[in-house]
Image (tube, rainbow, N blue to C red; front, side, top):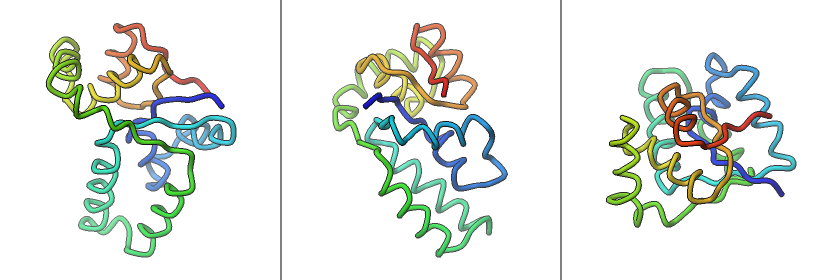
Length: 138
């Protein structure tokens, strides 16, 4: 099975219909023959986005529960080495490419695993291109 690093800018667009586009839909559809690898911060970021959606009235508890069930069923594995990299390689990449540490964690994982990165984040796309990381193209 092919692998990719999944950024929250893609996965959260699966939840909020107004943020979905051809790219995010294609990434979701490709998960029949691809698996996703995410840094350990991914679930915290996802949780925060969902909480913010609830607070702003963009969704309700039932919507969130259904979406979490969907995420749990998808081939998404968590990399548990992210914390080891945080004060070293993630920090260096964040500094080098002017990223947040959160975004740099996705870049670091793609570099370390040698797999493409699926993201819609413009700064992360630019950093990936400069770092020679392949961007996932469904």
